Image (cartoon, rainbow, N blue to C red; front, side, top):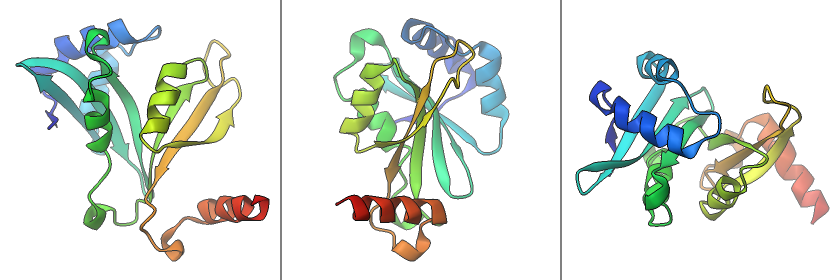
Length: 166
């Protein structure tokens, strides 16, 4: 199980970050997140080595995965799924939060496929979101066990559109 990230994990996390992304977060980005009240950062260890991390934040009606990565040589062994699962609350803990969201670069096909296997679905294309002009794709995992009355209005409207298409 992932454990809370602490300051002594930062060097290992930064190494994973740099090995995983063309535009990695800086040390300051991680420190700022760790100091935020609504942000949780966790690391996953295997054989006493940090193999991955996830940073996520709580919003009024959703949880947002802000950053997630696994050491490139340790991918496709289930570590990413364990990290994603740690962001999805147990049924009794969902409260008013009905979904888990993530924003991905349109070119990050590996991540898009991975989150699809984790039952996330794309729901919004944000044109030219990134500084380099690349689009982002928003994906979400929706808690299917929550009553329709508990869904935000935008989710209900989207569900109604999908029903009309069927």
